[in-house]
Length: 168
Image (tube, rainbow, N blue to C red; front, side, top):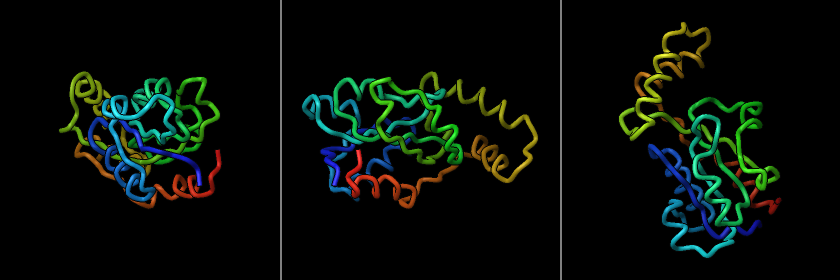
């Protein structure tokens, strides 16, 4: 089994935090928000990092990579899984070879804070203005209007299989 001493995450509206909790429960590893992890874990500790997606980047990943030995990465977004999109996600050069997993999280407009609230409002207006052509596009439009939650234990299966197999 791969050595992961902690699950570290950054969450904006709670979906990434839920995945981190489920992953911690499944692996037995302690779970820390990034701000707490930098205070409690030693530099270089092997961790699995989960972060929410913002403008094509995994929020908090650079900071986590400077402090910890990131063994694997979970990117949490609201779109359906798309390997082409996942391959394009920006991450530090030092983590290009680290396994990356995409987890569909959700969208909770009422929980957005700071600059993200108006930024996502603009995005919501743009997305909902165009007529939906597929059920998936309708689902995304509904999520932008009402919110959506796709968090599920089943989405963690590839990560848990990878950890169990001990692959680096």
